Length: 305
Image 1 (cartoon, rainbow, N blue to C red):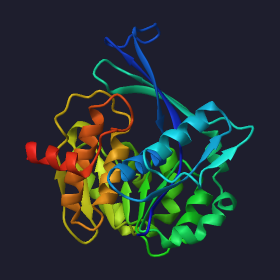
Image 2: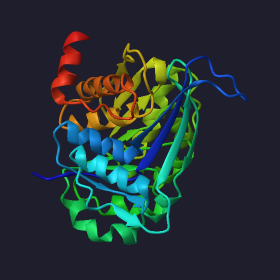
Image 3: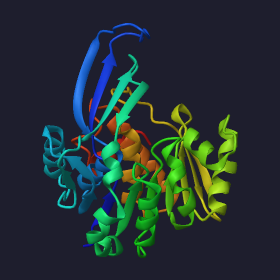
């Protein structure tokens, strides 16, 4: 069975959760948690928990955080043999601050090590890219690396997580090679240059992306839910899950893993499954639900149908 191959960032997530409404410029009582994170790493863990043979290509520092990340990721069932351990560099870290309702208010990331994920570093895995059953690239890697990855993707469907309003622009020259793009509202706006002030604006942004070759668009819009669109096909909305939010970090990565798991199904069905993956992840303290499985997702869907 061909593996799903995931390329991008691996972080140590440091999340602070206030127990009351955040007071800016002041010290807030709450809790602080450390957990493995990073878009690509999170997606890889979720794919493994959904039953897929999964390989992660990433880079960590030769430090305690890096070794901890690799150990935790391998324990979740991911092949981390393609992750570079780089001496003299710090493992990526992602510091987020969350309000009492669980929503993220601000974050700071130190992901300089992602610049080391170059075509030269990835070249030994060119055959693995071409042989993969599906590929996930996140925009934490450079524009040049994204171009190299797309050029070596073979016939496997390419899924891209746009990561942020700044980093999403890195995939712009290669949209023609993307099977599924998963931006949020701000990222879709940055890419298309179109105003996305209300959900009624989502179809125009999706059509802009389709016109540049993206086959499927899944646009997350917070409390409005998810807008999905198929090139030359159907489009629609999936309502946001009604769930008590424990931690919003990682829900989008679970959504992406669900979409990849359902890649051979109609997009509407895939989005519904993926949103259930996100809902389960929203309800746990970390960036990944350690109990995520196809069976649990199906049980969630049966209850919330």
